[in-house]
Length: 242
Picture 1: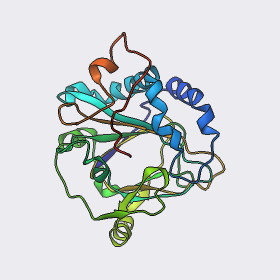
Picture 2: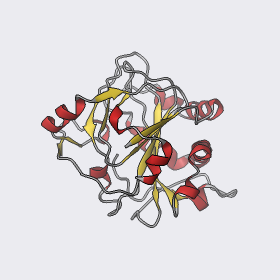
Picture 3: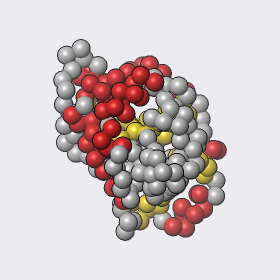
Picture 4: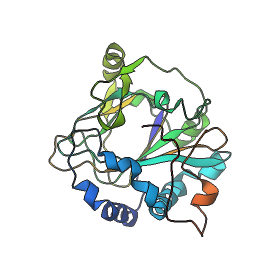
């Protein structure tokens, strides 16, 4: 289950994010995304708050969730050129974080992204509108067979088994996005990304939200995130690895 939202994050917020991440953008790694991106927001809490504010203006999560929190947030810079990401679900990565799944991803484009630049690949038949997405977010669905990936670039150590992935990929297509667009997908939605065959890095990030009461650990709850006295540093006690 997934949905695409356009013009969610402002140009000003994107510029602030890219300026703060300039040194990472220039890195080149043969991985799914530059590894330093996983810790980027641990010391940039105010920037995360700014991005979240733009996203939540559209999502209005306090009205849709009981006690929302941010589980983790990563920069997802894919080097140019950079490898494709193999099909997988997020739920196997998140089992250690929560027993009952409430977590979902807000995948944010920080620049225009098409099939040549590492676009997300999703099944069009699983696209829903925003209301349908949140009405079904707490539904438990099937965890498909996964296996360990020997390549394991960027922390993607668990991927869909080859035969399962091949069947699913017949119906998966690249999702073109512009800067500021957000793609929401739940923990059970199979997804992958295309290779970045361009010379420039693919610029994206994600915020993973969930219910505070459900998660064993999380980055920050909304009371602290939205506080006027919010500090400058975050600590993630237990990263879900993806």
